[in-house]
Length: 537
Image (cartoon, rainbow, N blue to C red; front, side, top):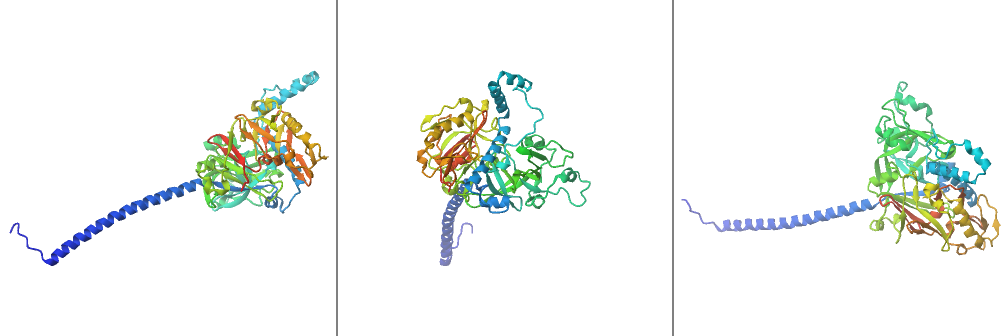
């Protein structure tokens, strides 16, 4: 009958209420569970973000070994040769001269040459002027000059280990802030089987060399050559000495580096994976990095090094590659005193640590206070790092140094260079610095130690006795190096003034000995260089 309902039994009542109890419990539990799960997801995401941030905070780190380090000596010379300090200083002085000559050819070459000709003309007698009339005018541009790299690898100062390819192969490379291409001695077979008709094989086969330790390109699954017909080869890589010659569109893009003294490196460009260490002890892969596979080298300046790590300012240098991989736009390094401890290890990091990131990167920790000055990159500084040095003071008194010495457009200007050891000053600046330093040092027994201008017996000397030098920049920033970085020990009871003079016009170079025991930070994004005292731990 419509509307009639049979009364429920007690058991039915119990089942009904039990069902609703279970439903209520399930809904309550589900809400709590989902809420907790949401919180857990949020916590997981937050933790992931923290981890991601920490990953981003970790920056690429290399140990820097000076070329006098026993490990490098064993690699290059085949033994753990340890030179005494005087031998090392003579070696350093010779290398610095070669380095400066190479830098001058690469950086600001026309301005330096024009200024040199003007200076010679001003100093010449009428007779000499008449004789020099056959020379081309100062404004003439040399014709047919070969491009020369900013690096002279005979003056390589620091070495790093780098893993290249998939699977990774390990190489000891020269760390050079004055060049842009990372390359290593290499073997690459362009074809297999009958190669006689293969254009790629025939083109360069006769120039290949058998290296004792080389990158085996064919063993790497990530190695991919750049074709000579590509826009990248014909345009983008021109500054890295790419050769325009292209007999076959599929042939690899070839480079031909020429160095001071007639040395050269020839090979092919390729994309490759580089494996680098991080400050947290982990490793990271930099995919699609441009490298050079060097198949032929000439000249003894390369020695036993496996190649070079280019840390210059171009978009193809490893510094910029690291910036693309979220490691910050720049690099920093801290150099320990390699004169007193030949086994000392410095460090180099790709990336810019910040106060928030440095807490987790002890080996790249920022000092409490960094001092910054403007950084100049690109023309007219080529691949080097320019600064606006405008003067030097001794014990608070500015030295009378002509302003043209610091003017890049007058053949002067200043760069910071880790590849040069002693600080090089144009003659007018050098003379004034020597005039300020020597009076207090003349009371000690003077010694003739080549190739230095002033040396003395330091048995009664302490660094507090020497004038304090300060280097002044255009924005008011001041760099005050420790006295031991310019009154250098070159032997038992022997110290010398550690500056080198170059006839003006000449570029001034703040060398790595003057940079020691400081953290140096090169920030590309903010176009500044920072420095602060550091123990380099």
